[in-house]
Length: 279
Image (cartoon, rainbow, N blue to C red; front, side):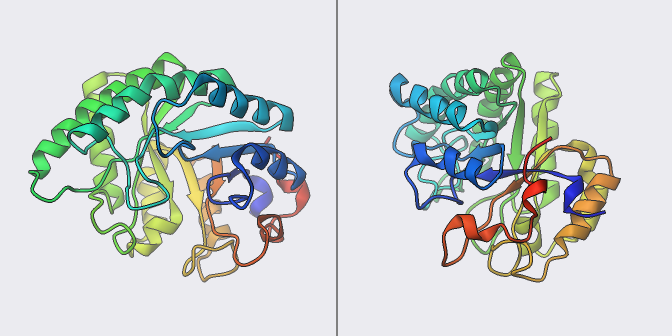
């Protein structure tokens, strides 16, 4: 089983980031990809002007690219933040202000997966207070996602690069997902299985796949070490994606890696052009 058995999309927040946002969908299309994903593009605001949302929708449409994953507002990302929904005060308020905007934008472009980054621990705040707030906000996000026919994703990050982020193992994220589904009864909270983050945490990725493929709603990849393209590190990515397919996962594989020193378009040699169009 090779890479040709999977559906890939390009994360336009880390690849083609050398270009202005509105030029990235066309660049992905020029590299033969038809599907893309994004972190929340407006890191300064959860409520961008409608004309900016419209311009992004037009850029996606004009390029013929399908948005298959979108983050809710997550604070300064890229930057020091790892989400907003568990951070009391202004950041939680910003996340709530963003929920319906992100869901409506997803609906307008046919995006069926919304990722909610949990947020860092805050010094001086009881973790239980943060977890209670997180559950409240994730329930609101799950209901909004369900309203537009989408799933809610919860992601494991890695402790070396995100030392204040509490969900740094697959079981920790799954526990949150199970709580959200129990609270809403919707069953649309799913695991974002990021192979790079799991490997950075020293987890047995094959075992995580076996245990949680049935709860997985989206997958992201990068090689390790280095967070580069497949083949730049030592992860057996082709084998691991084969294990995912064997375990029943048939969803999108997001390319969330660093392009290296050259242009992003030069970082796709590992994947034949004929295998880049999502099917």
